[in-house]
Image 1 (cartoon, one colour):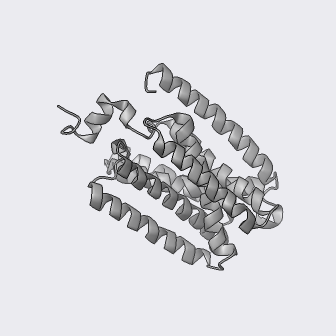
Image 2 (cartoon, one colour):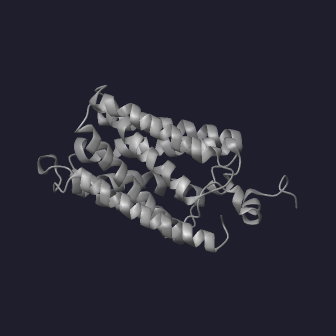
Length: 260
């Protein structure tokens, strides 16, 4: 069967280099959650030392460069991919926080707005491509839809985490455990109730953002804000080191398996 007539799953299995996203493993989820925490902490670190308006262009430039490098590449590479995800984590936090701090929108409004944005992106993706499976990311158009979805999930997750911690007054720690339970839910539903793999993946993916951000805030921010005041700079640094170590492990395993 030729690539033109084979299914997305068959194309990925026979041509792994065509897939522009990593395999979904425990390491994938670990790096994803840590990257969300780093994005939250580093964005806060910059915002409290410089004007948010001054650091916003830095975030946008970082995001554009990282996505350009990722999308222009002809094949998947762990360092490129996770570099793009980390850039989305930082810039997504800046933009979502800016809607609240600078524009003055409530967390209720930003959460609802980001949810609508995500729904529109997913609807457009499905309408055009007839699939939302990440195993089918082997064309430019699908990759653009994928990254638009990723950006939307980060914005929604940032707003949702702030909504539960501040508007609902749960605090960062309780919010973290709430989203931890919600993150685990689709995995259990997929395993025992046979829910849709695509739905379970994207539900869990969305939950990783407020999950990582809530725990990062709890560790990093001041006691007056509900944290334990380790410092956003330290949380950012430790998280970044963990990401580098885990991505190096993933990269080594993938190279040994001949995926790159």
